[in-house]
Image (cartoon, rainbow, N blue to C red; front, side, top):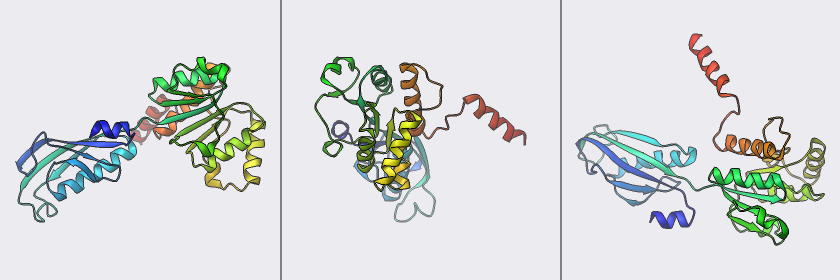
Length: 262
């Protein structure tokens, strides 16, 4: 079952009973798989109330990507509803996330380094580039050298980077946003970004659509080289993916210390 889910790129959570005090219909070592909605796919860890509690944790873990520990009081009023057991049960819930897909359209050294970094970070990397550039992207999972319209993309795209420096960048960004891609990044100057924004507004995109546009793409690292530009882009993507702040870790520690003192 797990291999089938992974082949189909469907995220799931593994729930495992690792501690029981008292009596329970579930046993230490029992496992069950849950989907993104918190519904059990297969396996058994206990009765309906236990399953509901663990299912909620599974749904949350697949949303934030974090492991969860669920401690269940089998003596509680909720557990007494039709379940003759007592004591405590602990369940660990481990999210099995699907690697996000990064689609990059463009060529050159920035795209090449983007592929290398994204591959190291376990992204599924798809590059659309000219035929004579194909060999530069050995780290990509797939290289598309034929013309590809946004409306013809038949796979899920989580992040899209446009690095063509083409006069049609505004139209491509528009199509990517209309398709609903969560992150549309454009390697562009401030002037080019203004042109793109004007085009998007003139063609009826709303604020929610524009909030998914990251142009110029990347964090402010004062990047000067292709390698630094690619790094700044991946830093931004990882920050957004993990709900990070982008602040220096030292500043985060100082903030916590100041709160403790106050």
